[in-house]
Image (cartoon, rainbow, N blue to C red; front, side):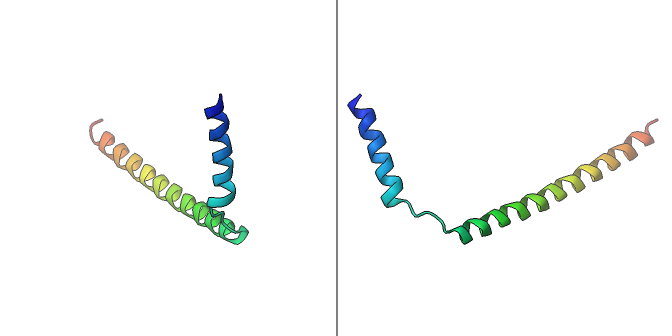
Length: 64
């Protein structure tokens, strides 16, 4: 049980003393970058899905 207690004390100390937390502005900027990247990647995947769907419909229609 002593090892568990020491682990939590050391973890708390590391979070308080050694970790560099981002500022509020840095956090907002990082969040905005992630949101924009997510929208762009979602758009690209949607376009690829639409394009492959249309291509497969064309190929299937040739063999009907």
